[in-house]
Image (cartoon, rainbow, N blue to C red):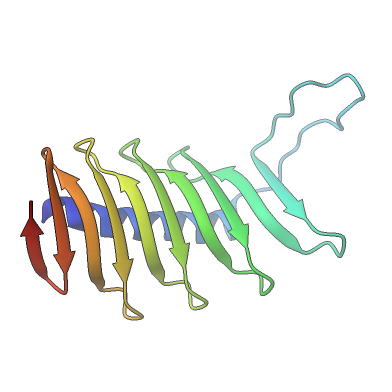
Length: 145
């Protein structure tokens, strides 16, 4: 169950990092790109649509870890890909109220987990591999095979 807690926390951290990334990281001060540039460097890259609305952000969080967030039509980060503070990759989906609903991650034990949460943020279903054993968690019950 420790790994399930890790996944839930990873999804929450990913969502929190995405939220902070969208609001707190200063704009990049990279030089204007020239025709010959093959590399662009900066602290934050913001993708906007034709109306100037933010659609995606690539930046680093307060721990220096990369976070990529895609934004919906209401300006809310809904999909995020991040490397957590434990150097594990995580993919998170949030609902319209910024709650982590779906999480996919490699745990700090190098196992894998997929979580589905309800509207209150409680994990209701999870599929994981923990220590070489596949586990299915449904409404608090664990089934191993």
